[in-house]
Amino acid sequence: MDQKFIINGQQSLAGTIQVKGAKNAALKIFPVALLTHEPIRISNLPEIEDCRRAEEMLLALGHEVKKTKLGPVEIRYKSQKCVNLPADLVNKFRASVMFVGPLLASCGEVYFPHPGGCVIGAGTRPIDEFIDGFQKMGAKIEVAENKYRLTAKKLNGAKIFFRKMTVTGTESLMTTACLAQGETILKNCAMEPEISALADFLNRIGAKIEGAGTPNIKISGVKKLGGGEYKIIPDRIEAGTFSMLAAASNSGKVVIQNCEPEHLEALWALFDKIGVKYKLGKDSIEISPAKKLIACDVKTHEYPGFATDLQPAYTVLMTQAQGASLIHETIYDRRLIFTDSLTQMGANIIMADPHRVVVNGPTKLYGRKLMSPDLRAGMTLVMAALIAQGKTEISNIYQIERGYEKLDERLRGLGADIKKVSTN
Ligand code: EPU
Image 1 (tube, helix red, strand yellow):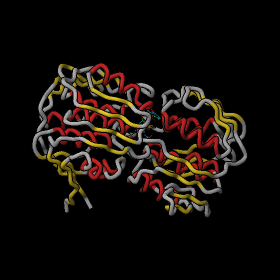
Image 2 (cartoon, rainbow, N blue to C red):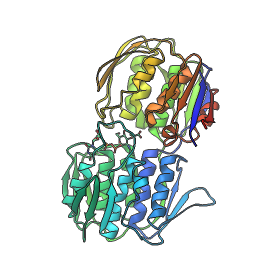
Image 3 (cartoon, rainbow, N blue to C red):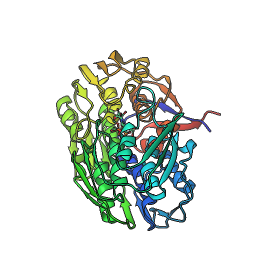
């Protein structure tokens, strides 16, 4: 059933909003269950479409997944019956590639199509870093018609240098190396907090990982992993996006709770520059109305730099700031295309090339009929609609609900006029 959001903008936003568990941490923990026969419990799991797909993947591979009375989801090994990753699920989310290494390690074989996910890069988003890593660990690779078959009697430790800093690539090879024979050294690793959180959990259940959160990670292979509970860290992208929504709306005091402000230092440095009034607590952020916002350039960067996933929301914020700002998206080729929708809403945005736009502000935004192109851009259109004058309709909201739990309900808690309706 297709659904859309209907938003009447310019309501005053004030009050508290809770941040959920991080999607990009949650998705990486499900495949760990393939590496152990002990139960794994996941708490603070966001109820989002991508996590449902990850659960379906484990069910298809023969595992049991159920919600316990106390809340956490529990995964139990029943049988590992399949070496094929179901194509319909792999097509739906890119993090499905995280299942490849563990399945290869536990079955000696895995067969899968090129993974799907948000269309934010030119063509399909590559997985060459994963494939080259598995090959270095001893896997034989066959590729035909966009489908991969990997086989390995056993996986060995290896020295791997990532040509590109890759978040899921780092997580995938780090996880797979836990049960490989010998030592694996990963260099030029991504350093996102979700990677350190995953390494901490793997170490708690018996892995030997050193250096996660730095560019060099060493994994000493162990014979087996145990079970335990993984509490998902708060979603820093949600926390940052809600902070920018409050700043752009500039209408009341908004407190964002259950978050980790330390994970957003790049955003606070920008807030200092543009004049957002904010206060950080241990696990909360308070945003108060500011007299005036001043435009400031931004360039996306791997962590701890300014996250590409926050770029769309920052672009909307800049439509409300005084002056010109250059938004430079360095990670993806297609992540500025959504600015066309902002232009339709009244923003003054000039595209210099696929990686750079100039926003001239402040401009009023007006409600329009729009379609969510992908997860973060979709959320950003919701944000633009909330500060725009009049009514906006946003279709294709599956793309938004892949990553944001009960978004409409939580925004209504701040005073937003947003409802979800069926389109057929
Ligand atoms: N890349 C390659 N080859 C590879 C892997 C990556 O060329 O084998 C390139 C990508 O095309 C991209 C760059 O390296 O240009 C960085 O990609 P990365 O692998 O780091 O991205 P990812 O792991 O696929 C995760 C998040 C993304 C987030 C990026 C960057 C998950 C499930 N996804 O993607 O989140 O944008 O890191 O921080 O963790 C989102 O949540 O909306 C989202 C897209």
